[in-house]
Amino acid sequence: MANFEYTRGCVKITFDQLPQLQPQIIETNNLSWWQHFINARTPRKYILIQDWCISVSGISAKLDGTIVVTKGTEIDGASIPFPWFVAFITFGILRPMGILLTASIPHDYAFIHGKLNYKQEGSEQLQQRVVQRHEVDYLFYQIVKEVNQAPIPAAISWLAVRLGWYWIKYNGKYRNGRFPLLITSLLALALTGTLFLT
Image 1 (cartoon, helix red, strand yellow):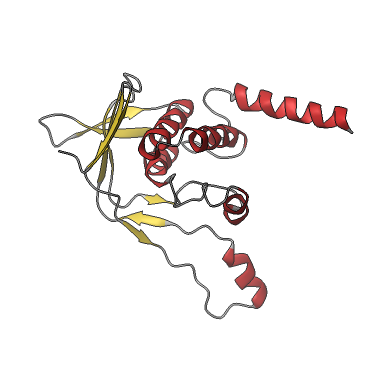
Image 2: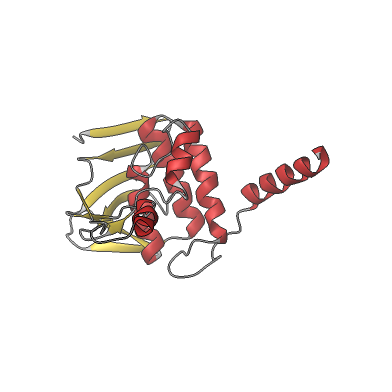
């Protein structure tokens, strides 16, 4: 029996333990005040110190199964630009190591490798599945929504990761995968509305 199990409708997400992470040191010795200031905004990176498994079902045939994020994977939690500001304006809901953490681990792994590892039943070998950017963004959304029972932060964070299509590399390449039509349309409408109001 999994220690953490979340089910709503046909979607089910389970994992046996929380991910074990080792924070990486941000060097601050012998720096000028300006370098200290610059370093203070550096996102902290973490290393997964043991394999972490998360099982998903009811999302899609391609994504369902037990995902294994391997030991040694470097993550930074949710890659939020200006995390202190975003955390402030969302009253601490959206922050790199908050409710987005469990979803960000397979998401970060896929962004580095362009694929996810899946455990095969009755075998120690891992099966690698190539996943597209929009697919892993949807997985991120589903995990945030189900694990935290937080559909609004899940939707906001999903829109943010889709917006990242413009400037964040996926599997070493910019702007690959499905074009983020919804978030681009929403931004265009917001900008158009702003121009009409001025």
